[in-house]
Image (cartoon, rainbow, N blue to C red; front, side, top):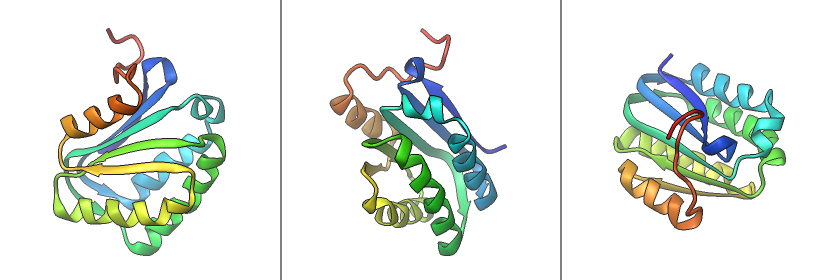
Length: 138
């Protein structure tokens, strides 16, 4: 599956990775999976959504709104939220901006970057202890 997620830093953070062509169904599956793990989601302080290795995001505006409806459920568990998005490709960057506008009503701070180092630097500026280490990582 080219769109996956995992928790980092003992559950304080989450990384979502997109690779190759990502479909709306994959994005929606991730949003729903998070809502089925409320205990884990409540611990989150930050998230990094990394589309560095993605070539395309196949999602319509209506499908994006459906994802936002799932995000509204998530926001009841994680508020405030801190989200850094890495979107080097114009098409994905544009969709990320659209999503950013749709979630403005949530208590989330969302920033979009063209490179992962920029996004990580921003996250660590707010959450200095963020190491982005998967469970069992050093």
